[in-house]
Length: 123
Image (cartoon, rainbow, N blue to C red; front, top):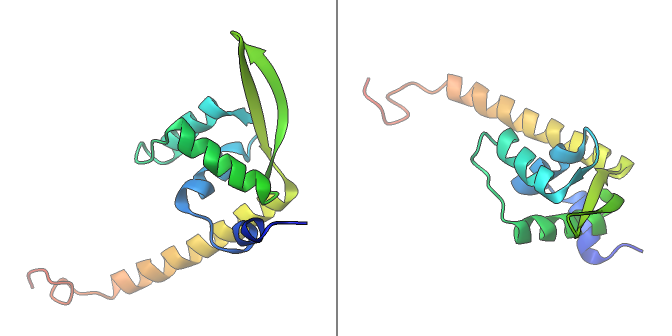
């Protein structure tokens, strides 16, 4: 049975950062530091997560059934956990991508109709 929060994660719009984390693991399992690096790269450097923030997001995505642990290994005496996206995660990422694409199209269409004067610029 999913918790109330897990249901909210799977049905509500994903946060920008959760979206980037799912995007990071869509092409294959990654460990935490690789996810951090991918999020930074995909966001063009505008999103730099701290490890505590990342693991809270991973926990929520895991609780919502959108990701799962792929494997664990010990590297230099430290546990490295790899995460992979689930089928539900792929579906959720697809839906969210389509929603964001439609919103961006609408914004672009409306921006194209704005004259510089209407936007507060010089005529």
